[in-house]
Length: 219
Image 1 (tube, rainbow, N blue to C red):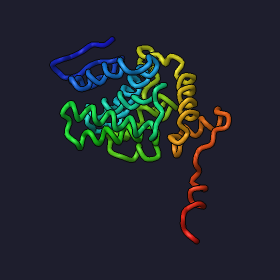
Image 2: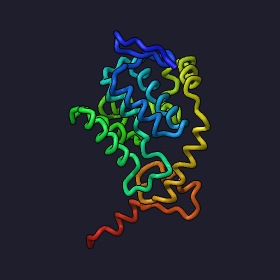
Image 3: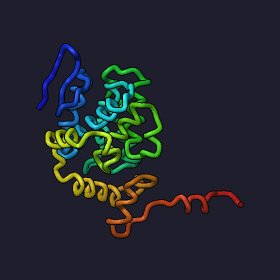
Image 4: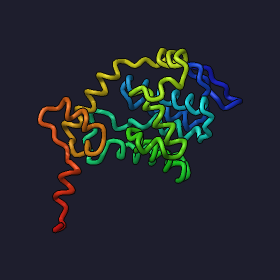
């Protein structure tokens, strides 16, 4: 799959030089064990895209934080998820606990929490610390083509060839619709609402308009 350079502490994956540490290697294997194949390929592509964006733009960052946040951001994107909180928040707690158990100090662990919790909220994530913004950008590139023109097409093609998309659009749509249908309260304020409104019969999410008008004040 790749060429590893143990001395330099780097690993070449699809032509992208990424940091090579035990923590990152463990995160890759954790993702491989817990994700469906299409999701594993998605997080690998997202990580590689994030690294390349950083390299091309000269953005200094913590490579381990970026790797783990990007690789594990979808741990709750599966048929077992039922809430009660947004899937990104539930995932952020799981991943932060995971790295704390590995001995990571709290500040770095919290950056990973932010990366996971904000991965689907680019209107915030892209303006956070470099690790959070890069995680958001790499995922956004893979899912919706955000900043697609930043990375040369040949490099994107090499990454996709090694980690094929495996019908990601249809499978993600199915997953998002299931969550909107079975746990509609978790779709409030995030993109799941878009899938619920378009595809799920009878779907209705809480509205900020209703919350404002029903606030317990006399004005």
